[in-house]
Amino acid sequence: MNLKNNIAVIIPAAGSSSRFGGKISKQFLKIGNETVIEKSVNKFLEIESVKKIYIAIDPNETLIKSQSFFKHPKVSITQGGSTRSESVYNAVLAIDNEIDIVVIHDAARPWVSKKLINKLILEFMNDQSIQGLYPVISIIDSLRMKQGKELIPVDREDFLTIQTPQIFHKKSLKSALNKMIKENLSFTDESQAMERAGFRVKEILGEQSNLKITYAVDISKNIENDYRAGRGVDFHKFEPGEGITLGNVFIDCNLSIVAHSDGDIVLHAISDALLGAGGLRDIGYYFPDTDEKNKDLSSVKILEESLNLLKQKDLQPRNIDFVVVCEQPKIQPHVEDLKKSLSKILNIDASFVGVKATTAEGMGIIGKGNGIAVFAIASLENIQ
Image 1 (cartoon, rainbow, N blue to C red):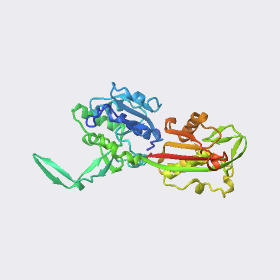
Image 2: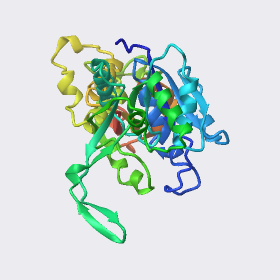
Image 3: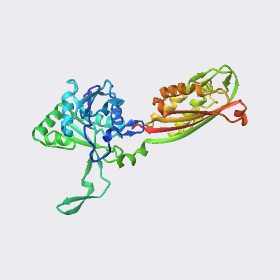
């Protein structure tokens, strides 16, 4: 089975979030620089074999138009129903005819990992005997079953929690949902509908981190899993010259920076902050000045390699903030250019780039105009 460009993803997002509370639906709340639904949708946009994503939404919901993915060519908005099953069925009917495989994922599971998505797709591709696949995890809390007015202890080893994403053959899923709707049945996930219709589905091991947001506390107690922070500091001497480059922005002045590489001290400090946040070594370890091949090396390449090292750990920049300390040149006129430049290199919005400048008030080598320092802080988020 070749799944390349043969997968549609359905994300039902028409719920009212009655258990969550609040003025807006939980899928539109911000977690860092993305909403809950943006985190879910954007994760699938990174999967090469996904051809289309169908988002089932309440027709009266206007916040969907402000989401980053709204005008993405791979995204289609479909009409949500009064139940989850109706929303999913409406989306199934909208799927392109040439697509044979459907993945369904809860909008409120923003911490799904690409590893789990790819594992699900690979297992489904390799097992021709099944019509569907879903992830499960073990229960860690003790359980009791309501029996009249009594609460009867039960063995938690006999129970599993069902997660999304779930994956099915489109033809089988359409048949199962149609049958369920005709019989006026309601299920909490599509694997139940498939089993009810007689199709063979099986489970794989899911991930404990793939949590579903139901109550407001579910965000606050898990948000710390998304972020790390690190610091970077760098110092360089000045010498007479024809200008310096900071943050990949050229600043015309009568100075140059003494350095083994190209001397972009802003990118050096940011690279160290990012690497530190990721629990990695500093740039001196990865780009030693004793190595001749690093002579005049572009600091953009240093930063890009730092980002690649973070990507290997499923981490990416969330925001950066840095202070430039020097007497000359004046940094303030270049703040907006620095924000735009770093936003592009780091692939984050310019509003998540902080740029400040100060002087050393005449103290030390920097205060005498003979040097420059940069102090940077960076935070990372998990992209699993």
